[in-house]
Length: 156
Image (cartoon, rainbow, N blue to C red; front, side, top):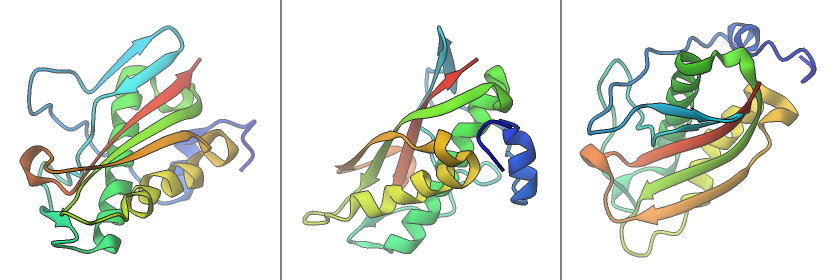
């Protein structure tokens, strides 16, 4: 698919991926907000069917591979939030990804973990998925999640 087609919904179908329902907020916030031609998502956890399939920290029991898959799920959940607000096909490009990784002392593999989100967005959006990014190690994340991802998307 070329980026000019910009049928991201069709691209997900082509990849055999369905957007999940938007994850319910776990505190006082909304899943996504539009201002001007940008949508900012709240931090998304790797919920699957309303549950966290994985908890814990990197460098203390959670594998890099499992956390990378969880980061991918976070990005998918972020796309669901964007879709519910403005429609997936209104995305022009992914501008920025911010990823948080629950890290044990001394763990430094955060960039590789957040690649799960970045690579997924590249798979879906091609060149329009190339983005700026931060990958930050933190002591704890909500509900014991190993990862959390937020995105900023430019939209029409």
